[in-house]
Amino acid sequence: MRDIFRMTEDEAYEMFKSIKWPDGMPTCPDCGSNKSWTLKGGRRWKCQGVTTDPVTGGTGKCHLQYTVTSRTPLHSRKRSFSDILVSIAEFVNGVMGTAALRMKRWEGSSYKTPFVFQHKIREALKVDYDQKLNGVVEVDGLFVGSKKVKPPFPITNDAELEKFYDLYRKKQTSLVVVRERPSEGGSKPGRLRVIHRESEAAAVAFVKSVLEPGTIVHVDYGNQWLRLNMHFKLMRVNHSVSYSQNGACTNWAESFFSRVRAAERGVYRYWWPRYAEQYGVELAWKEENRFVDNGAQIDMIISCLMRAGRSSFTGYWQRHKNRLPF
Image (cartoon, rainbow, N blue to C red; front, side, top):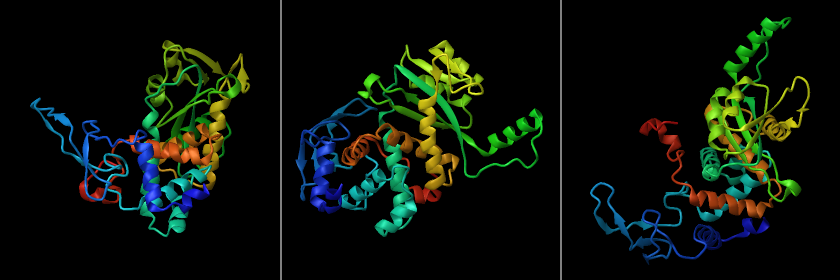
């Protein structure tokens, strides 16, 4: 980790380039050709490949000029590679997350820079979400929000309790996790998938989409999960009775929620609904890779950034000008 902070700009650039193209061959992000001219300066290439027009069907030379960050979340970057690498290291070092204000003070930048950069990383971490989970998984939801909700009246019966729950649901939204159990012996760590919805019931379609056929699913006694019984073997546990029941439990999912609560209390204290999924994805990735050393985690994040497409957070602070849908 110490070597990261001592890297020169050229060394940091070579690190990004080697992770982007492990074979050392620059590849066009448009046509996929590795035939190109190296332009002046050595860090930009012009493609010699052949591309097909999607409208006319005709073929022609690609001639795209590209760099190592073209068509990635780092497209049109303004910061140096060494500064970006240090920001990634700071992001990794925050076990429960890293506040943008802390990075602002550390880097001497404006608040806007780390805020957008961190969200670009969180968005890139979902690049592997197309890989489905299998084996035994646990599904559960957690209410997250900006402020704690207290009942404005004394709760003395079930009717008042249900009235409070209705108020609670209006102020809080659901962060649903699908967590794969580790393999026997721990040789294969369990993967996680996270999504944010207004309610747990709205996340059922997502849960179904990230699981392979034949997966065994452990859930609580919420009626919203019963629809999963049509596609997977469902094991349910009544948490009002015990934590584990007839071999069914959601303790792995609950252990992830303890990390979320710690981050909510100590780092990301204000969870806007529009960002809740981003924070959840970050914490899920850190939970999944908690036994991976920091150096390897930095390489993994760079790999995600190099494989992800243009970020929706590009031009975030100018969205009122371009009317971007954020």
